[in-house]
Image (cartoon, rainbow, N blue to C red; front, side, top):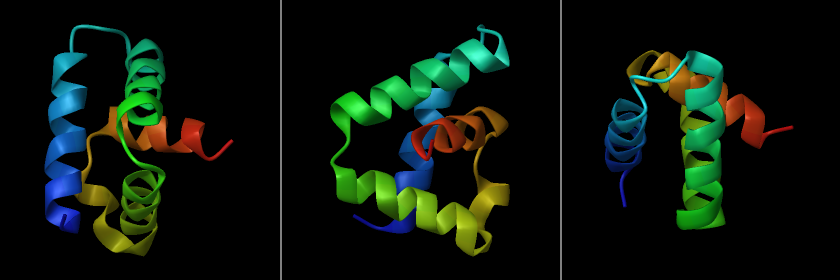
Length: 70
């Protein structure tokens, strides 16, 4: 799976929680990523955000990634 695929899928997940407040959406996205994504997929997305692709991710996804790293 490419980094572009991971970014697209993460943003799609965020779109499903668009009606929620940002903190609630971030928590739900982080929970979804923990439950349904392989650890390698999560790590690749975190690495992509740290390596200059963060602007491609929604703010809610970025907040979720911060939660995943805690």
